[in-house]
Length: 215
Image (cartoon, rainbow, N blue to C red):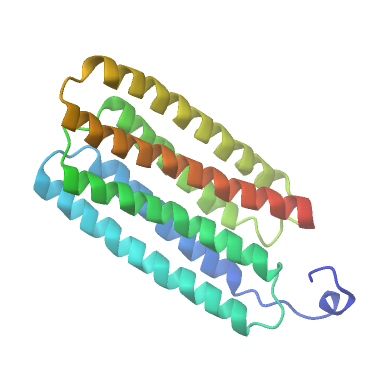
C-alpha cells in the first residue's frame, strides 16, 4: 500500500507517469482524427479516417498491455496497482469508443453528419485535451490537487453538455427523419458518440478517486 511504513522509504518506479502520458496522447490524437472525419462525407474518406483511428487504437492497446505487464513486474508503484489498472483501462476505453464509432460511420455511411454530431466531436476533443493535461498532474497532485480537481469537474460538465446535445438531437431526428434505415444508422452513431463522453467522464471519476485517496 502507498501509505505503508515500508513504502515511505522505498523509491517508487516513475515509469508509469510517462507511459500514461503517452497513452493519453494517443487518445488526444484519435479524438482529433475523429472530429476531422465528421467533416467528410465520402465512403473513401470515411474509410481512410477509420483506418487511421484503428491504427491508433491498436497502438493504445499495445501500450495499455505494456502498462499492465509493468504492474506485474514492478515492486513499488506510485499508486496502488488497482488504481493504475483502473486509470489505464479507462483511458483505453475512451480510445476504443472512438474507434468503434469511426468504424460504424465507415460501415453505415450515413447522411452527412449533423451539426449536433460535429458539436459532439468537438466535445470529445475537449475531453481528450483535459485528460491529456491531467496526466501532467499525476506526479505532484498529492501536494496540490487543485488543478486535477478542476479537470475532473470540467470532464463532468462536458459529459452533461454531451447528454444535452444528444437528447435534443434525438428528439429532432424522430420528428424530421422519414427514412427508418437512416434513423437506425444515425441513432447508433450518436449513441456511440455520447458514450465516448461518458467514458471520458469515467476517467475523471478515476482521477477524483485518486484525489480522495492520496491527496
